[in-house]
Image 1 (cartoon, rainbow, N blue to C red):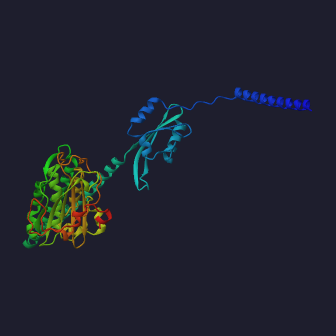
Image 2 (image 1 turned 120 degrees about the horizontal axis):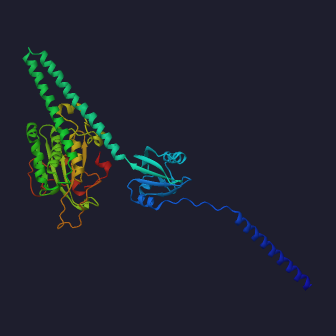
Image 3 (image 1 turned 90 degrees about the horizontal axis):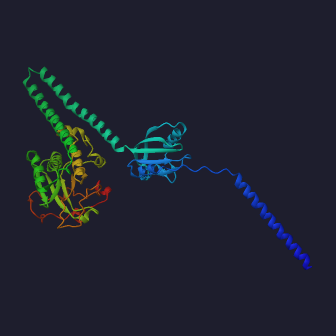
Length: 441
């Protein structure tokens, strides 16, 4: 019995050893006959270094459309996700270059933002890199194309706006010529010619002002500016017109505030706001320029600000027009603008000056009640008073609650070094920041 069991075990062990030997032989034979795989092409070290320092987006693509290396801008532009190029037009360009080896380029528009609400205009250039790799370079041209569009629109708008008064002058000149024997008609036509000439002069002057503020950088030759002098200069520009219409100009709020920038540009910007307020105000009303110092805590992440609110009791602006009032040549009521001599450039100048000084401009208005335009400017840093205040330029500021006509100080209030005691507290004093929807009602 024991001999039989031993023989059986010996047989099983022999079979196991034989099976292992056969398997090892076959594996060894397969290893000898297997063709070694070709190594994947590597990205040249110099190319990798260049991609790391390029501002443009750079991508190195392998022979199977896989991304071997991508710069940070390539991912921020949304060109690459994981190890693949996700822009189909760009991927097709890569495949064409791989087929024929020729350098190709094209212009693309890429969706930008979480919901693709904005568009990124780019220029792509694709070239072979060695025998199997493809190099993709993408330049952001969004700003350049936006500037070109603005320039074309500006030239077209200027041509149209100049054509209107010039055409009117030509017709009036012909009318005067035909009415040479009628002194009353000549006098009437001459008066209308004077109006059109004034309108043309004003348009040319504001075009020059807009070009000047766009060309000058207030940061390059920044100086310390007393806001009191800016406000006085702005009020002086409209004092005669205000007296003619019996509109009271009131200076209220804080004094002694200092900002940094160009005094001339600030006087032009604030002067445009005051001039508009006087122009669109009925007789026997008031226009108030109210200045407030807002501490650093008012706008999170920014230093103390000067808030200059220009309020009137005029016709107001329709809610649907509020978002467009700062566009060039945009006028809420073109018929009224022709009567008042408005060009549609004044508020555009204000917006540009505010942005170039690191600030912002906002508007509150109700039809039939009046409007308030608020100019926000960073105050000149005072290390001794506020060592933690930030003096960085403002890129985005929350909308500001602007006082309505009911908040305006009485005309009898005089300029003082403190807030007038008779001025009732308004929501603007309690909370300067409101939600954008509320501020643009």
